[in-house]
Image (cartoon, rainbow, N blue to C red; front, side):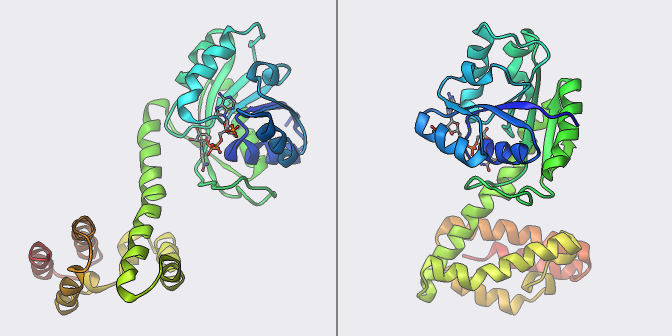
Length: 293
Ligand SMILES: NC(=O)c1ccc[n+]([C@@H]2O[C@H](COP(=O)([O-])OP(=O)(O)OC[C@H]3O[C@@H](n4cnc5c(N)ncnc54)[C@H](OP(=O)(O)O)[C@@H]3O)[C@@H](O)[C@H]2O)c1
């Protein structure tokens, strides 16, 4: 594909990661912005080029592809600012990286002739990533103007991503599910690690103890699917063990007990579907969870 001149407005974790990967593919970084010049300079060093500035309009000038990597709430005002500028927008691609918002948030730029899109890597990037392999296999949800979608769909595989079509109207749900499976999982793990204080373990030591189990479970789900990946006392209809848990559960905070009951009931449904318990066993398990503290 032809080499692009690109700018990143909001060169934070996502912006720097994408900018770095695009630059490695021979695309030219033009302008890079952050709220502070200091951050923009660091971003330019990470990406390996591009003029650092705090002016989004200046950074966007002269780029064929403008990536907006600012936080969600700043995208609409930024698009309005850019649209008010004297820049020519006709034919340029402007894509933001928000998971929850669609390209509709870039409407003022679309009206000025820009080809707007959203381009969301379904990845959790806690620090900017470098190296060709870093987004290997990451799905990228893309929607927007048909011509920009076509170009972005051919660009994404060159940086290791896998393009996925998510309609604009489904983006909020798509993103909610991502948060449920990623951010909520982090919160859930933190609750579990804290609960290990009852064993005399620090959260760090608990992480060392339990993370191999967590990783193995995720691997099993990836390999076998949720129904066949379920192990543990519910999958075996093991009421005796669950009664032992009922005692230990008293040591946990009430909201965690509620969460455990909710998820255990879901496990009963999975075990029934897997055929590892009978309907009678399922009824007894549900009764047992109902009587738990
Ligand atoms: N991180 C992830 O895992 C991830 C994954 C997929 C999608 N996303 C999406 O990517 C977007 C950015 O997330 P992030 O995690 O990369 O955030 P981030 O690391 O906080 O980066 C945001 C960047 O935007 C800059 N910024 C803020 N307001 C600005 C403005 N008005 N003009 C120019 N620059 C501005 C910040 O500058 P300073 O550095 O000077 O503060 C910072 O460099 C969000 O829409 C998010 O939903 C994130």
